[in-house]
Amino acid sequence: MTGSPLHLAVALDGAGWHPAAWRAEGARPGALFTAAYWADLVTEAERGLIDFVTLEDALGQQSAAFHRPDDRIDQVRGSLDAVLLAARLAPLTRHIGLVPTTNVTHTEPFHLAIGIATLDHASRGRAGWRPQISARAADAAHFGRRTTPQLTDDDVRDSELIAARLRPLFEEAIDVVQVARRLWDSWEDDAEIRDTATGRFIDRDKLHHIDFEGAHFSVRGPSITPRPPQGQPLVVSLAHASTPYEFAARSSDVVQVTPHDLAGAKAILGQVDEAMEKAGRDVQGWPLRTFAELVVFLDKEPGAASRRKARLDDLDGAELASDAKIFTGTPGDLADLLLDWRTAGFDGFRLRPGTLPHDLTGITRGLVPELQRRGVFRTAYEAGTLRGHLGLPRPINRHRRAC
Image (tube, rainbow, N blue to C red; front, side, top):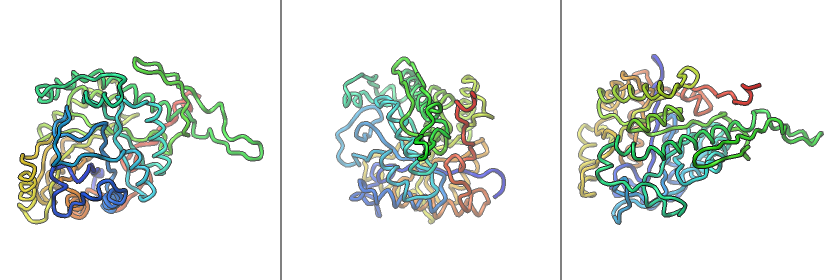
């Protein structure tokens, strides 16, 4: 491999990222809510040496609109719990990272922290976590404890406006991640003694209260789950505007962004750098990996991917729209684009397959071999943890540093 490695993640969601993907040739709509379906996808991604997969989740039914429910019956509705699904997939895989999405607006931080820590134990150090705020007012009705702002159609047309309106939720999310990180460190690495002769299972002096007091909640700690194998599971965020960039700078190990061309990529990375500086983050001590997002339709034959997408657009009754760039073409064409965008400074890319499993295998059996031929992608896994895949060190426990 020449130079630093290129990293690839795959975003798995339902039958694919096109709303009509469940109607595509080769789709398996009858299997969407089975563990076997997801196992097939993740093992295929691992066969392609992908760094990690992300699993989508939400507190409400999917919707054609970002900010409100709809009554459509011609698109996939319903999903499995992402953390529980990742835990089921962990023993079926050996190398690939597993990054479930969880909502942080209506879920207790303590519960989130132990869930992700448990996933890291189950996967032996391959867990990540994508915290997500709940931006839809309708989601709050499932819990009845609070309300969230009702966004309008005008709001969602302006990424900066919507980010400003949701700033309080992002501030709360920063606290949630901070609590999780403190809970992961609340057990020192050698807190477990397990000495049957003396009857000492733990060293109580190496379990620590976190005593977090915030605007929305307080958490005493310590965790009920020993420190995860990675020390700190990878925190991944998706960001489209200044407020989410600030969240990433203050909370994340990986930030995924959505440029549509090389100039836009450079501008976004500049904004991320500004957010890092504003947050006072030491990039040497705590690096931030940057990934660009693309929705991809891949076929070996030139023009075939565009025709396939057009058929799906016709079935759905509208041309596909996305926050991320939509790519249609051959694996070689996509390799050209990724290497061009990489010059902006990206560490990697998260690819959203338009249809599953077709475009996933287009990545693993088309794009990956093409990148390997160009000497920019691994030919074997070289690390045993998700942090290791991305060249990130295992953090020292904050209590050990204080000693």
